[in-house]
Length: 126
Image 1 (cartoon, rainbow, N blue to C red):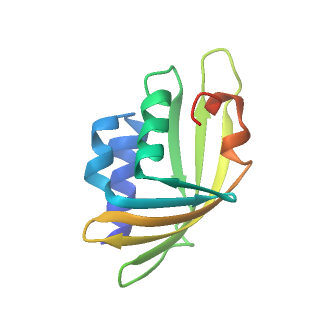
Image 2 (spheres, rainbow, N blue to C red; image 1 turned 30 degrees about the vertical axis):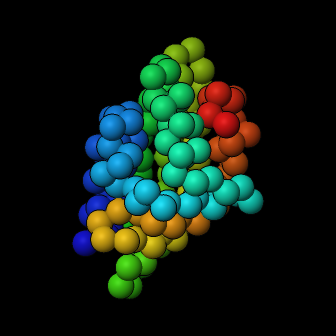
Image 3 (cartoon, rainbow, N blue to C red; image 1 turned 90 degrees about the vertical axis):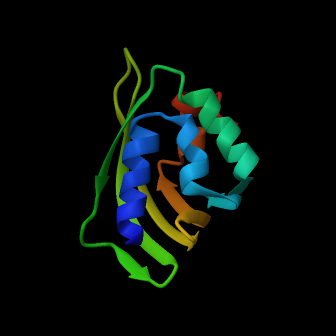
């Protein structure tokens, strides 16, 4: 069930760049631990609100052999490809562990390569 929720979130929110879906998929007490940084719900929402209106596009591919689900926890591996007009696409590998509260992500720990926060496409994120 959690895998389906995660895939739905990436389809409905990230790939669709629909900022209105953040509250659907993320708990108000959400915390993101990413590459040594921590963001709360407000910072996460604000960053996406700045990036989504830009010309960036996202596509997601999952490692179907890497899903692990137990109770309220979900782990996995995926690749998110970002593309902006006139630039080469960038593929970001993501290894993550998420905990859910109800049907929303409560905590998310992730490592990405390359570090997404260092990419030019996200310079307006932080």
